[in-house]
Image (cartoon, rainbow, N blue to C red):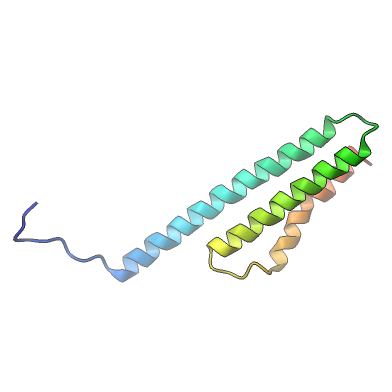
Length: 103
């Protein structure tokens, strides 16, 4: 470190690029984690006793609630409005879970 030659100030464009990459990485981690959580809840619903249809449906609905929350959080992280048609994708675990475990 040379006190007579200080480091250059970071370029604002570089800081923005770094922030964009950080947001994308966080979004991927969030969606992956919530997707695994939702899939785990649907699998757990399959292992509930066959006469407990209410528990099976309940776990599938909880899986969708987590998925919708994860998608909304991803939209917010990326500075987009959380009111988006992408939230409908969060209903997939519920539909698949009910189809797989109840029907």
